[in-house]
Amino acid sequence: MFDMIIRSGKIIDGTGNPWYKADLGIENGKIAKIGHLDLSKAEKTVDAEELAVCPGFIDVHSHSDMSVFFNPRFESTIMQGITTLVTGNCGMSLAPVNPARKDLLVGYFSPFMPPSGELKIDWITFREYSARLRENKIASNVAQLVGHGTVRIDIMGFENRDPTSKELEEMKALVAEAMEAGAFGMSTGLIYPPGMYSKTAELIELCKVVVRYGGICTSHIRGEGVTLMDAVKEAIDIGDKAGIPVEISHHKAAGKANWGKTEETLRLMREARARGVDVTCDQYPYDAAMTSLATLLPPWVHVGGMDEMLERLRSSGERKKIRRDMKHGIAGWENFVSDCGWENIYVSSVTTERNKGLEGKNLAEIAKVKKKDEFTALFDLLLEEQGKPTIVLFMMNEKDIRRVMRSNLQMVGTDSWAVAPYGILGVGKLHPRFYGSYPRVLGKYVREEEVLTLDDAIRKMSSFPAQRLGLKDRGLIKEGMWADIVLFDPVKVIDKATYQDPHQYPEGIEYVLVNGEVVIEKGDHTGILAGKVLQLT
Image (cartoon, rainbow, N blue to C red; front, top):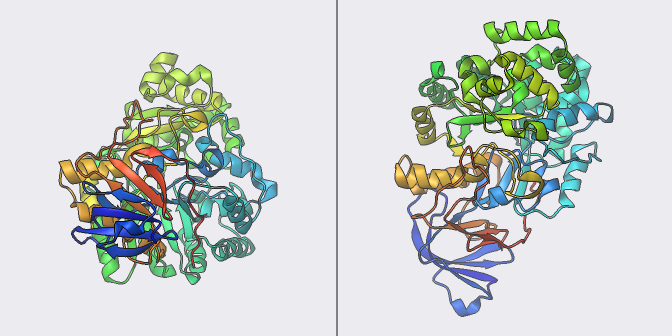
């Protein structure tokens, strides 16, 4: 007797092969049988006659580390069909924790915390953190990375220097502990402090630890604008010298002067693979990025952490230095204001009521509202908001988006965290990728513009990231695999979220199963929390 039969759907199995018609029998959370099945032998049946049936989507680049603790229903992601979230990206994980530097770690994450939220960190090791996660019921699966930035904070704080040999050994031990606790790899965030203070040799040494356990390195590379080429070469160099698979996160060419460079970066990746370096990339399907407002400041301003950054912003002398460096640039630093322009950088979220009206406005508009020049408006807003605002930056070109998307080295990710239109996470004018990334690919880039075939798009959302992570029992419609399954209408599926009205669910995602249980039914959340914390085995 099957727990469920999904009847007569067009099965897109995740391999990239064309669809075929069949029934799916699900038992004990797994796909038990594929074929023509006796419907009388099922406790529940779902009619998929007009629907596509495919593996659950794996978001290889998620920041849902804190969503687990604030809203485990994961509405904005599960409603897209995402059944597995890969957390700990861009060098930022919630473990390990050095109690003496816990405040620095909290400050590190503060721009991504809900304004009224408070996270109780009561763990130290990565294993303790994983155990804490398992105490929570969650709507989808979670796979964790250990963040290089978090490891560096644990040992060195926000110091701009190389680690001593002793400190490097201590960092290696923390990475090893995380991998032994089930982490799938290590992430780096090389445009953010403290990751930006590290040199390539340090990253190679830490990656050598990760690869011993079969893990990967995902990297927000050192620059996506004027330094893009060197940054991609560094990522490839790390993969080569550490012998580790490398995933270049949210790959793009940022800033008009750099548009078109993805042709060269993809060539670099193909050439690296030809000589044996395992490098791939992921991408969200939008022409704007999102990060913290403080990222606009030069690297030296962040030394010592958030409190010291804010102290520098209180000093007129330091403001002059910051202004000078933002105007003229610093070698090797990704200067977003220079690359994008004030008018293309929008405030997406603030924490105080006094500045709520600034959400959705760009920094040039905010300067006019405040009757200040742009630099002063930026510095004052950071102080008023304690460094916590987030921003959306319009910086990409559609030709680059399509070029990267078509590459067989690309997979899909959201670069967001799970939120909802209500409650503690339902605030701000967030990037529409939070709600729409996967349906946007299926609707805009597959059905409307034919940039991808449907079969290949599903591969990029399921079996490809599963292979990348080493998930051997997910990512395919195949007997014996866990029943993470999405049923969607290929004719209707589309994103609805916009930059000015982002808290909107997509259309066309009809059913989502996680470990064989129905979490989304006829487009609505059932409240079932069937996810698991996964481990690299």
